[in-house]
Amino acid sequence: MPDYRRNRVPGGTFFFPVNLLDRRSVSCRCLGVLPDHMHCLWSLPEGDADFPGRWRAIKIAFAKSLPTVEPRSAAMTSRGERGIWQRRYWEHTIRDQRDFARHFDYIHFNPVKRGLVEHPADWPYSTFRRCVASGMYPSDWAGAGDEPARAGERP
Image 1 (cartoon, rainbow, N blue to C red):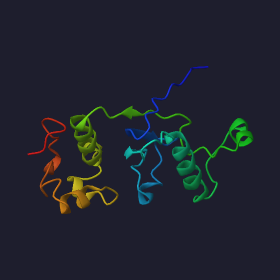
Image 2: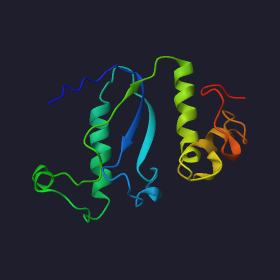
Image 3: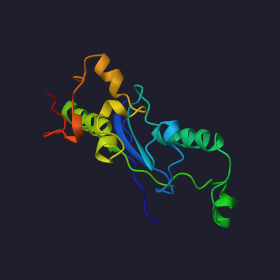
Image 4: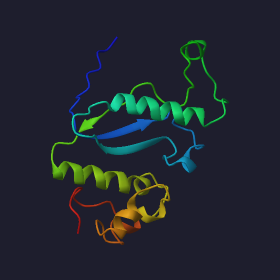
């Protein structure tokens, strides 16, 4: 069995792509995730490195909010798993402000890249419009399907 090592940095900032087990599922759009995955940027409180506990709680609460209709193997049923999320996830420790900006831009452009909308503001389950309102992005950032030329750098 692989030895999954987590970079637990108290107070660190992390980027997470988290996948649904059935990546063809489209039933989760209205709950704030893309059809088959979601991305998050988290900054943990000072002295706190427990992102695994947070992910466990999020996945459990999410699963409990949905009816049990997905197919499950006997092993999944015996472990109490729902068959919604992939068991593992990957995290990236944000190194600096440029790395943060690059991942921040990636998250906001992803619905466009996936062909779900034509402009980041069109995706209703994104923080993009809030970022425009606070002055972090111009309202026309990455419009009409044009991926940012240099991720992490805003016009």
